[in-house]
Length: 619
Image 1 (tube, rainbow, N blue to C red):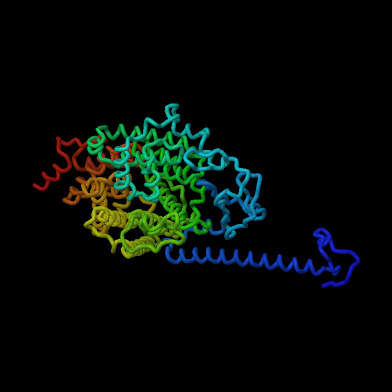
Image 2 (cartoon, rainbow, N blue to C red):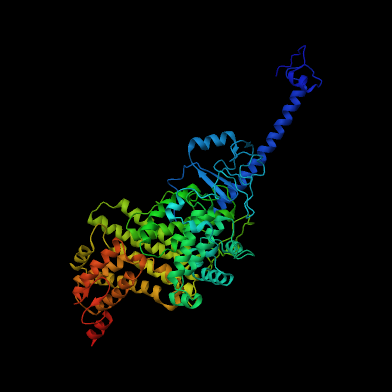
């Protein structure tokens, strides 16, 4: 250090008008620098402690709640940031913007001021509140009591494009005429809670109940997001009802009420600008609405809409785990539920349309929700609750998610290793069967051992697992790249025992599926099961009926196939489309083998149904 004396005071001492010892640097400057360094060190220590706590939370969560498989290959190196402000959020992963934001600090959405809070964790940037900002653009207070920054969401004015999707009507300037009475609202909420919520779990029910069932439950909210959710819940409740019960309870036809609440939901979503909205509540309403659509031609509409919803979900950062983004446990759990609800919708829509899914494995790292009751977590939770080793509010949905993703990953792994040779095909079959055994063991260990089949919904859960595993076992034995007729021909050349076992399994898949849709114990949830036709099993059974020998087993197969396919044909959601047309053609061929004529809707064979035919053959 140069301590030579000068003839003049240093600039800092001159500006502060304090005594300078004229050394270089002077004693006052050295003291000031030390104080600044100590202050900076304390600040850094505090920041390191905060980051360490966050890292421990993430690691602890990762150890306690493992994902079925690693799905983060494509997002592993993605550097994204999430901006949150007043119920709206926006995710970005553009490298230039991420780097720029990191360098200049947090930039307020008003665009005219910055804050100096520094990044949280390096990969997360959020404006948790905007109390520090003196330049809010959204100064006008939302009549619901919520303040919004105008540049995020723009919920108050309908943006061009939303009305185009749902044919926005001038009638919807006000939706007051579409609100249910207080008595109807109570009935609809109970129906939603019993028939819909256990199967979907898009929402945290206590929070949703607080929003919908408060003092203003039957008043018209100015919050467009809450309005969209309210009508979506009503629409879902009506969809889940049996037509006869709907007529008895509301003295109206179910179809009429469905149209009533569907129109209201669509207009509410348009008013909430769902295509441009960065509001999670609006996205929840959208996913619930699409999940419950059951009308004619809706399958094609849902498939097209999943592309838009996928973009919206990505824009909200739902494909990234909440713990990576530094969100609190409640926010993280709700975001997980929304993502996986959309994941299931995407898979269902893909099956209907016979086209690949929007979500590809490896493009997300969002973990599965926790196996907990809704009462185990709240907005005030500061840590993740321990998962329960019992049947919880989330168990059914978790099973659906785990089975779907594990089967998809197994299929992709085998496809990537397949070379098209017979030996490799046989090896892949063995690998797939081994993988299915592992899936079954995992499900039994995590869920099945805790199911009480004397409780209807838990019996449904066990039946769904068995149905899905039987379906997967059947598909595992069907050679890829080979038509159903070729598969049966190959099996008939020396594998009669295996063919019969496959035939029996396919029949049982159809019987279980029909049971879930029609059994009195499952009637209140049949609206969901009707959306999952067992196409593989139906095609295999009908092909076998058409080319195989006519036996008692064939009669059993024909009886269930007739009931299942007829039910599909009477289902508006499944009337049209390539899968329906394919099944109808194969059904006609099978009918010929049974001495019948299938005209696409009924059997014509001397006025005898398949059940009658079975009876006559037995006698």
